[in-house]
Length: 356
Image (cartoon, rainbow, N blue to C red; front, top):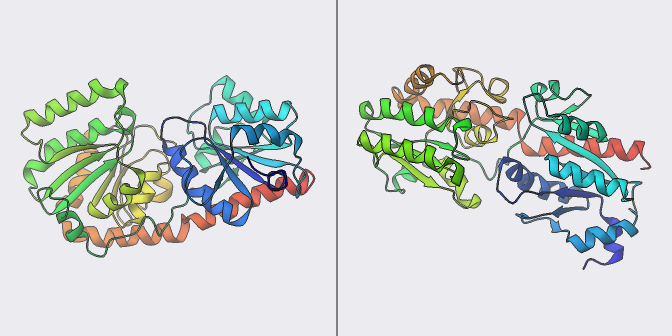
């Protein structure tokens, strides 16, 4: 149990109310410790990262009777509907909370989500496109990447060779394995390309849920029928701390999504110096300059995606230069410290207005 004195000093609560590891959880885990370095912030929910204290359910309940010491309200920073719902209920029941919703969606929201959004004190959108679907004013703060966690390897060829996979170069896609992410498009492109490019091996890293098992089984059957089971590998869900090393092992990253909120894996790959081929989903057009810091392709177009990937596989010596420009782009416009400072700026705006 947290001491009452310490409880009263808490300024920010970062809820993570999802039992399934997702992109929202990944963002929370990287942002939260950096916020905690600058403010008295705590984590509420599973998958807490190092560098931030956890708030128990009991302490959250006790907080009702421990008003914030330094500000008129505490910040409840939500990224999901259930987190908005819980924050709103607590506020209605007397908790001194100001509610923020961080939106990455690029679609018209459901009626219930619109209701919740209308009750938030402030809205943050991860892109101008996301903001356009909110039907109210939002502060646009682009995602940022931890440039120390996601960085190029000292020797990419050696890093790939250490995996024991065939060939000289890796090409991969990471994230939940489902149709929305374009995994079938990636596999179809690899089935066409790998027979002509023996130096490449493809890896697919991410969670396969029971509702997507038939989808994956079909892809594996197609791979086996083509005799490419050794060169198109499903590695499954890996511990989060192992994923950055895989960005360092591959040379080309494929962001094949049909629908996407922002596309954090694309930024992580660019920060690691990978050459990225991205469909025009999420924030791809905002992040990538086609032909310079990556290659863009239309969404859902297998012919165009295959041609875009092949443009890099055909000239592997050009991959490194694209990766270097991609890394520079992330360092300049999408670094995590900038994102944290802008988020804290929204917190301070609330405190100045609501009793700071």
